[in-house]
Amino acid sequence: MKVAILGCENSHAWNFAKHINENEKYKDIELVGIFGYDDEGAQKITEKGHCNYVTDDPHEFLGKVDAIICTARHGDNHYECCMPYIKAGIPCFVDKPFTADLKKGEEMIAEARKSGALLCGGSSLKFMPELKKIAEFIKEKGQVTAGNLTAPVNLFNEHGGFFFYSQHLIEMMLTAFGEGIKSVYARADEDKKKITFIADYGDFDVTGHYYECYHYTCDLVSREGTMHAENIAGRDGAKMSEWFLEEFDEFVNMVKNKEMKMSYERLLLPVKILNAIYESYKTGKEVEIK
Image 1 (tube, one colour):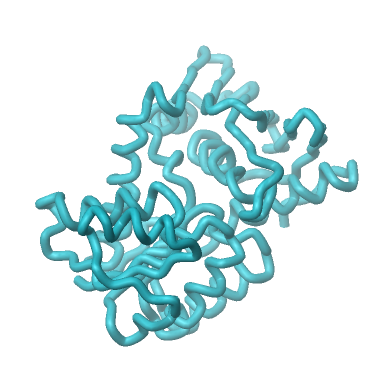
Image 2 (cartoon, helix red, strand yellow):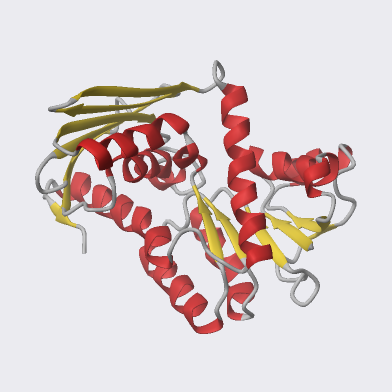
């Protein structure tokens, strides 16, 4: 299987390239080339000997690869990088955020439906084992009273502002509490670099707290008891590397088995929620998730 990496500014690109070249599990995968928005990211991959070909054209690999891995940091660049491949029916891994612009995300999904292009990606936080245990508990016991999550945010950056880092918390919430969100209400203190929102699930609410501290937590309160999930970046770095592999396995299995684990609608749902949170904290109004 031949693949290319588009946008190599982040740790996903470096980890995926390393495993393709060093992990015996992926010996049948060939990284034929990379495209980067900055020289430093590409250089890190080439210096390690994981790939020797770098291009300044993200679309050069059309007709040359079986799938692409898009790990560009800015969500809007995912549209630019992936759209020609999606139209050609080529499977794509699309990193978080899937897109920042909801309309661009909808266009990508519409074209994938037409061409049959298989898609996966988003945030690796959805593979956090403790979140799966909370979801299983809710499925078995029900009776959710409330939920609470925390995750880091980066409001001021050149990679899309709020949208750059915020999908992690949303993926955690969807994994633990499901997809039945009706609306969100958010408020922000941009000077203090924090955002708080309430997600209305109908029978219960889930609160989300974005702030500048690299702790990821999720708490469930129910009539049957409470549960807690936690990961601290740095302290739990080894665990997060395992999630990268699980995320990469999902991509590899999708391409080989020609089957998506996650629906098009589910891939786009975090983009809808993030845009609703952004609109809510900018306008001060509750925003429906349509």
